Image 1 (cartoon, rainbow, N blue to C red):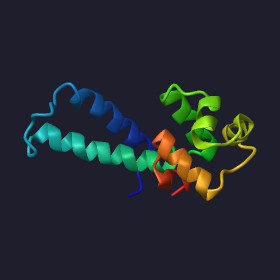
Image 2: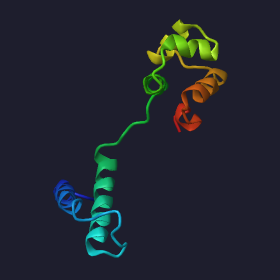
Image 3: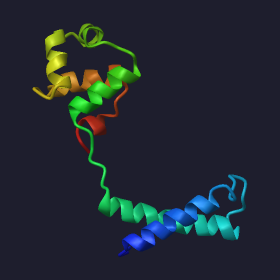
Length: 119
């Protein structure tokens, strides 16, 4: 689908109008719900092409997960059995973890292994 910027902007404006009107309980065949669904697909397609979201790096995954778990680098280091400086290397992108350490990071930080592998 080749969506222009003006079509994208029109779809965004129309979505803003429809959101207050369409509720979660709206029937699937409701005219407004169908229109909202189609326009949402238009916006998603346009944004995939023009505003792609890159996959996070290992450093970003570890840093974000530490924040989410309210955990320090030192606590993580103790949990997985490496030095705090090694965790700092991972967080700052200076080193990549081995598969064994990556597996431990996934378990402790609840990171999906596919995300850690960049899939």
